[in-house]
Image (cartoon, rainbow, N blue to C red):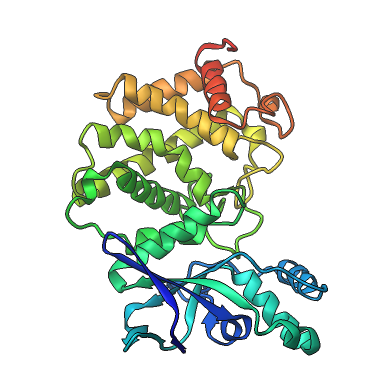
Length: 357
């Protein structure tokens, strides 16, 4: 495609083009970078299409005068884009970053109602193209995560997983608190989910084909943020060797802690099943995971020189003596409505002191 009218946008070293394409040009010149569970080396991060979503959109397109004001966000490798005189030459197809269900709706309309499609196929659609090199692919992933973790509920689990795979650990990486925390949290979550002697084995949703699991990688990662933050603040995560050591250390600690939790509240788990989680209880959902990890973090922050054995001893003492019962963790039970940071802290305080705040 040869584009005569476009706007160049620069943000630091990052480059984008804003332009207009016809609906038909979008249908014929775009694709989606889907995740494939059958290919372990696959770098796709988009979830599978949901037919009900794009069919509803196609039905809207059949109405008398649909308005398509929202722009489509795409990405292209830098070698796909060339300036030809004053025109922008686009070679090959653009990757859809945001808007895949709209494009699928266009295609569905073309395949099922060609009359309605022909009526709107020359509609002009605003399009943004992110210029992505192998070194800047993380900008594409981060943009997808930012768009879909704010406002609308779209799974970003695949993108989070891929971001850790391609993250650049070059100069300055270990000084970036958020980057290091995200890497360690993701590595821990993936390890726990694949450890057969862990209550978390096959319990965490890491891919779109893993429906029915009790918590997402994104939610589990967030529950570990303050715990990992402590180790970064102490300077224990200043290089990859230390990151590897403390990732393994925290995996071992969390596996042991969750065995203690299972022993204290056995009804909240399916002890003789694989996986062991019980969806009737909140203990392995956001409410339980966050509040129990707050308890563990408080022990570590209060006594950072303690050995793993001493930490586990104190954690077990607290869990054994708490007034919280199995029934308190029932979904829709006593802790219903505590699904916020303030709520997690209240549950943690109750576990620690027996006092309700």
